[in-house]
Image (cartoon, rainbow, N blue to C red):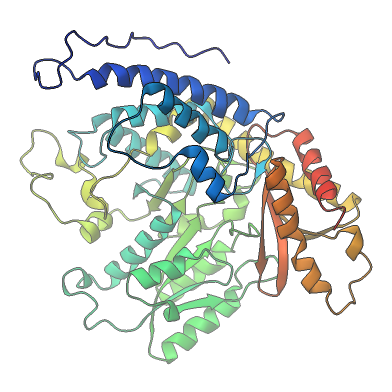
Length: 506
């Protein structure tokens, strides 16, 4: 990667640079531009070059006490010289986890897309707020266009939507909208007089469903968990039984939250079957597709979300499988009655004057529960423009290819016990010391210690990162996701070899 060259020359401080002279720019302006130039060089070298090089570590692990000393965290009355500050920047980059590294498999976000990153730099530099056309004309139009493109992929010719600060918030928006549509008086009167409301979601859905119920005053006791099959998919027959039971007990069912791509197993609920029940019982159908929504780009895999066009709302995080960069989360609505604005608007006259010289429908801020809202659409727009829908389709398909390769190789190796074979690959690694001892009384206890210990070893050595978790009656197992555009088959082989190496002497 070539060294960074700025197009403009940083301003030189004028002499004499008097802080009390209001006719002169502060000296900090010139120093700040120089600091930014040097910081960009560090970002390019430490984060985007070393941070994506397989010969470099994924992490430089330090215990909290040592890390605090290395970073010199204390804030003081006097500022530090530029040389020291640049050392701080370099240390932040050095000791942070390199999530763009090809061997970072830890989360449902990873890798780097440089077009998206350019969009992130641009929006940070422009530092605007996405609530009115007058303050963000470019981004109001960009957001609308990106949402239209996502609507088409869902299968809608029209609709509404908004970019939210994460998939959890998108899910909570959907709950709030579903409740408001049923009981619009809640906006002014609150919970007073409302019946007991009930939400249905799968036993393996995201925890934000319960968090949303708590936040909105519905209560976690009124989130009914529906059974799943062996693949982690919601069972429609159990859903219907639970809807009938809730109604018989005096509750008012109002929303079913389906999942397309569960967090652990990556399972896709049967949307068409669930849609039939939602229509039968007149329930709002929400699809949490934060992880799996990107399959809609793929002609090979979009069948996993068959029936999504029948949903009332969809949450989708392009910062996950599409690698748009944190954060990039959209809530999509089939509604065309301005429900989003009616539910959330406060009509602040200092922002949303109705006698502006342009079309006030372009002021989108009253659709959001936030006032300040970051621009999260540009990174996706710029990336989409750069590689096209075909490029994003290839990215999704490659993630499935990597998953299939891992599964095939695990089946050929001793010690790998598969629990899920989807784009999320879940497995136990059975070290040599535990093989053939499945009948021992302490086998499950010993097996539960394997993943945490291997994780500790890999992080302290810095070779790679992968997540683990227990689930229901299953003790700790690994979950690997491989979707970064930077990943190759060599990285898949390294992953398997490294698990074996780290787990050999246990």
